[in-house]
Image (cartoon, rainbow, N blue to C red):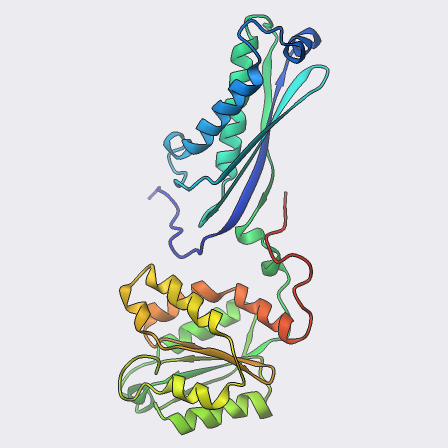
Amino acid sequence: MMGMVDIMAKSPTRRTATAEAVVTMRPETVDRIRDGGVPKGDPRPVAEAAAALAVKNTAAIIPYCHPVPVEKVDVAFSLDETAVTVTVTVGNIARTGVEMEAMTGAAVAALTVYDMVKMIDDSAAIGGVRLLEKTGGKSEKWRRRRPRGLQAAVVVLSDSIAAGRKEDISGRMIVERLEREGVAVADYTVIPDDTDTLVDLLRDYADRRRLNLVVTTGGTGFAPRDNTPEAMARVVEREAPGIAEAARAYGQERTPLSMLSRARAGIRGRTLIVNLPGSRGGVADSLDALFPALLHAFRMLRGEGHDDDPRPEVKE
C-alpha cells in the first residue's frame, strides 16, 4: 500500500539541502535583467519571494512529502552570458530532510524568472533542476566513522525470566540491534533483580574483561525489586547523564510513562554502562534514541576526541 514513509522512530536532527535551477535565455535578455530593463521589473526579488513561498508549501504540492518546519531559506542568483541560475538553500531541525523543499523552491523561482522574461524572449527555457548537496540524517559524519572492534555484554534483570517463567524479548532486541550497529556481543546473560549480583557482574565486565559497552535491561522503575540504579551507584566512576536523559526525552514524546524510568549511564574504567527499561517498547524507543550516536562515545574513551566538527558533513 502506498503512502508516506513512517519517520516516527527518527530523532530530529539539523538538516540542510541546496538545489539549483537554470533558466537559459538570449544574452541580451540577461543584460536587461542585469540593467533593470525587463518590463515586468527585476525578476530576482520576485523569484526570491516565490521560492520562499514554494519551500513552505512543498508538502501541499508533493503528495507524499512530509510537512516539516522551515527555519532557513536562502536564495541566490548568478547571471552568466546566456542563463540565470537560481540556488536555494533550506535548513531546519526535523526528522526528515529538506531536499524536496529546496528543489521545489528552486523550480518555482526558475518558473518565476521564466514568466517575467518570456514576453521579451521566446527562447527562454528552464534547463534543469538538481540537488547540489544535503546534510543531516544518514549522511552525518558520526554514522560513517564508527569505531571498530567494539565488544559488548547484554544483561537482562528479571526474577521471572531468570526463574524460567517468562521468555526474554527485550534482551534479544538489544543483542540484535548491537549486531546491526557493528558491535560484537561477547556475553548475554539473564540474572535476578539482585543488587549484589549485578554489581559483581558489572565490575567483572569492566575490570577483568574490559568490554567496551554493557547494556542492561530491566530494574529501572519504582518496584521494590528495581535496584539497577542503586547497583550503578556502586559501580560507576563517572556519570554520563546525557545518555539516560536523551532516552527519556525521546520516550516521553511517545509515552507519558517514560518519565518514570530511573535508568542511568556511566563509565567505569573505559567501559560504558547503559541502563535501558525492561519493556519491549521502552527498549525499542531507547535504542532508536541512542544509536548510532552513542558509538561516538568510544572514540572519546579511546582519546580520539571529536575530530573537527561533529555536525553533519555536506554530501552530494
